[in-house]
Image (cartoon, rainbow over all chains, first blue to last red; front, side, top):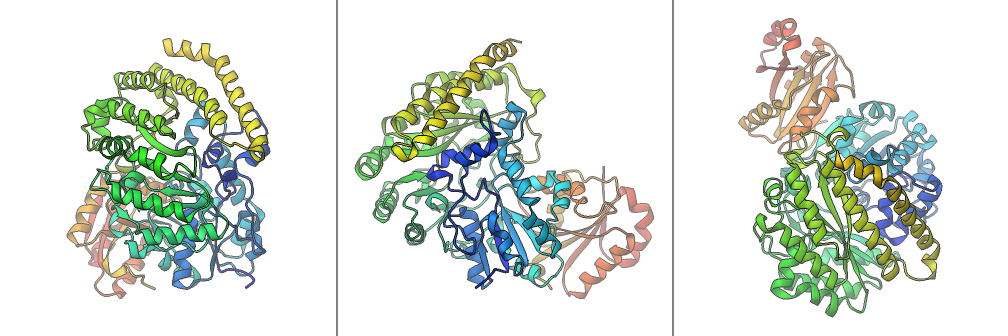
Length: 503
Length: 127
């Protein structure tokens, strides 16, 4: 084989294993700060190993799913590293591109952009790729360009770049049910629609979701799709909940391991809801999942996301967090990383925008649920990257005071807390963006509190848990330097920010 | 060539003027009409002098307000005669559910032509 008809790719900020550390990947959502951009990219998004055709050893999971679906249908398709797209110019008829945040409008990119006033590197890298010689030549040869992924909606705000880049179709939503027809039309040179939104009723069933054929970045595998909590700011929650059968999860992990990816990231909007009874975690499916995954991998397990409510319920009712960390995973790893949404410390706002986020507890108990769960995570060496949303529609200064009070109560718990500005998605996707002129004194105070919290804990996490060993020494030194630089900058800006907060 | 969703889709032909921007509330009308036709897949065929992909800015509010329907947006031309062409193309495939929506900016100029097409139509506020 010398080339593929359908080439699937992404820019470098996506096509990287981020040195095996997902948190490093978050650096690509900010502008290069304190160091040159090439060094920033070298730390956060180094190139991946490829074969002679430019196929990467590891690639983003979403691209792998599209590749598998097209191969299942019978197309000549492959994920190709962005530096090697030109190798397929003679055969390529369709170029498919995916991204989590094409234009840096999503969280946390939009926040870094807002704070620093500089374009984040993910946006710059993507635009650079679309203006590259390989993409330009593909366009000149009549290659059809189809883009998609979780950030597809951003194209609706970048119509000028849509035209400049010659994008034929934007697909928004779970693409498995429509991708075959679209690629067929593209290959037959038929007219393509400009925009396709896949509604919840067309979400693929378990049987329609393909098993990946090659390894995913850092061993990410999906264990569930959808979410039952119904938060109004989230798009995932609109889709039906599906548990992926263990056998399929095992197949994907085996593919990763056989390609040299030793670790696994279990992906779900809430890993602890795997096999749950509604929003109440069950012990048996979670124990079985972790035991079986542990047997398959030489490395460690991480969770993509979980919730404070499920963490508290699982520990209070079954001591499940202690069991998972101290009886099952204890000999594999000394910590487990996960992303968790706190969003607000205000029970009133929680009741309005995410009434089921605290379930099975009442929304009035949300701050207590968060505090208890962070305590459980701290005790059991689970390190959460916690997200807050600032500027949610209907938010009041009192809601922000409640968030500050909660931040004070959880300051002893090991975690990184990142505030993000409201981005219209989910049932709130027709609402206004959070704008610079809408920043209140309380927003500044919340941001300073989270910055102090995260800098304090980042240094300790790096010392005690993260990137141990000689091979990580250069990166550790740079990250230490970066943390010190941010601390220095924040201390320098603090008087002005505090002055702003007093106004 | 029709795809696997063609027979179950509701086809809405949107005729917009250059200054028209659909209000997000149009999604309620579209949802009601699609439901009445027994479909949750909507194909928007947009006729607009703005060209492609710029017409997307005119329907962006509509697209952003939708969470329930599957929506496919296709550019269908710049001129009134393109409306006739689209209607005729859709008629060639028997049994398709088709409705025309015409904006207030262009309705006076196009109403006679639309009525002659003998297709169901409705007015939309394009401001």
